Length: 384
Image 1 (spheres, rainbow, N blue to C red):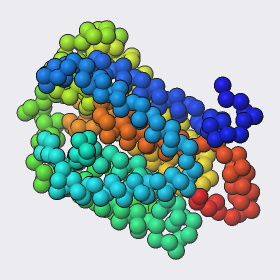
Image 2: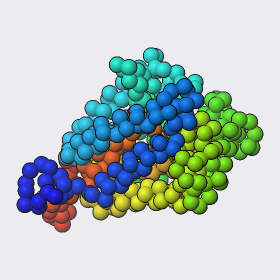
Image 3: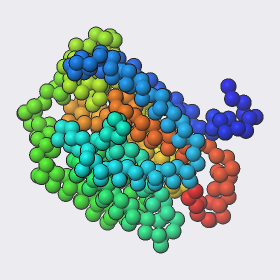
Image 4: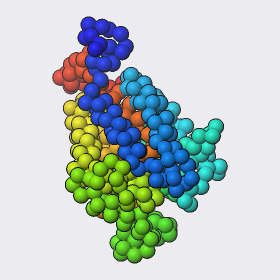
């Protein structure tokens, strides 16, 4: 145990970090590794690989992902903002590059290979985008003459255009929902909110009209006709699991779900460990989101408040979409379950998000004392 009397960086980190957040993130990573033993062997065998190929790769990603999360959590809010700006610039550049030299997977250009490693730049764009937009909103709130809101809108337009160009409607919807929540939190006029909401609805209808694969998924969801094999087998796995599951390794339906280790790991968890276990997963994500929003509600610094709220909303909405697809409550969409599904880019990127959350929610007594003094004197709290 680290002593409170110590003043080294590790001791300061240990006593100022939100250990509930840290435990939650580590717990989700542990659950994901456990479920990889159940979900990934059937996929590996269908591809002619060693049964534990994806399990080994999942384990390989765990340590660097954990190191990224802990390393970022040492940063100050100012350093978080700077790191996010750099990460966003690199991610956007790679998202442009992927349109020209990316690997096409199922009709979409989302992946780029660097030194033999496949990277999905949009995954790393998401946490950086949230932090940078939080900074822009907070700067406008602090100094209205700075067009921070306009820059945030322009940045959202750039990100949305790049996601649609891939195309990746799921990430576009996720990014729009998170950005919209932050936009609302920033106290924008209702006229702006109505206009942008109308634009979002209009964009959805354009996507339905212009993109056949989008129209096909929505039509299959509404009518139940066409190729619904994945969602049907996922639902069957959940039903067969009942309340307490069939037992570890006893799942049968999981063997025929094409993406059981990524998009449909929640259904595998239901079949082998039961609905009660899945409800526990939902409660963990709910706790994470509610704790993050509670932090944001108490935070006096606008940048910290917007950033923490946006980051936990990103994790919460992504998990909601994944679980909704598994339960056949939403149209099929390839989106991972944060920290649980297999995927190197996804896991590392979510750990970047987690690191940002841990860094921005650290308890800094000296900073809080200054903020309270400024608040009582009627002076706004500056962004770090």
